[in-house]
Amino acid sequence: MIKNREFQELMNSLQDLTPYQRSQLADLLQRIEHVEADNGLIENRLPTKPVCPKCGHDHIARWGKASGLQRYRCASCHVTFNKQR
Ligand SMILES: [Zn+2]
Image (cartoon, rainbow, N blue to C red; front, side, top):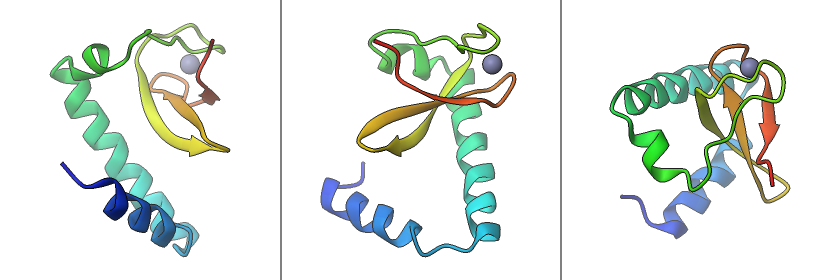
């Protein structure tokens, strides 16, 4: 498990990525999320299971944060959205 401080440095460095590098990173994260989803880990670590506001699909992956809010991405239609309350 990576330390919070190291994670912050990682997040900061991500802001300097080129659009191509970001797309590469997005692909990598998506593959990782799919592996974890196959293992059933996503359901276990989400306190409330979000569903896609667009298509209602419940195969949702974490998708970074925006303005301090956890964002999610639908694996079905690829729309991104903030955590629902
Ligand atoms: Zn969707």
